[in-house]
Figure 1: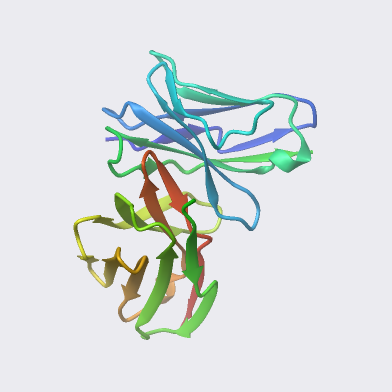
Figure 2: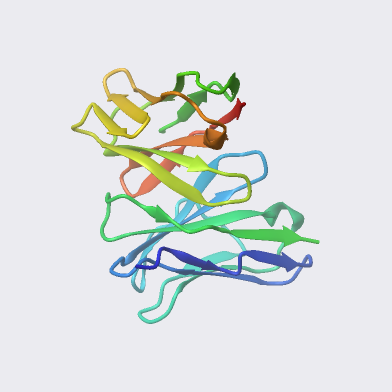
Length: 113
Length: 110
């Protein structure tokens, strides 16, 4: 039973480019959460999605960041026109329903040149 | 607004010691509390989940307690080993999201 799969594990982008981070939840999980861990800081909630719906995006920066979880395929976190401050580890978690234990992927480490 | 604090920020101990890591939260209206382990450059490994109606959970050498009324949880590690070296994160379930503490960086030396 595969866990939460994130890809790529490492992503390097130049300032101004777009970054796309993918997350496939555990089998049977329809709830996906994205968290960001800035260097030397704790993990911060970004967004919570259920299939085809954004439930809570209170932690998402107002500009350049978007997330989706389509009916088919993985959840995508998209960062447009990346800046140096976007360098961080981005973690995805999934759960079978709200308030159930969240299972985490290994993260995507994003580096901006 | 829920805030989660972990003390100490770092801890270095010789192998074999029993350890207590502390976590405090400001809003006692939580669903669950979970302890994670994070190794450098890696993801999060779930250690113990305590539901809001429970007071403690045990797994092997680990024991976690929860006191909602005082807003505190402790993670007890018995007979520490070098392989326990990692960052330990406490997180509370706040409706649909996890609120994380900043972690305790543990080093156990032989």
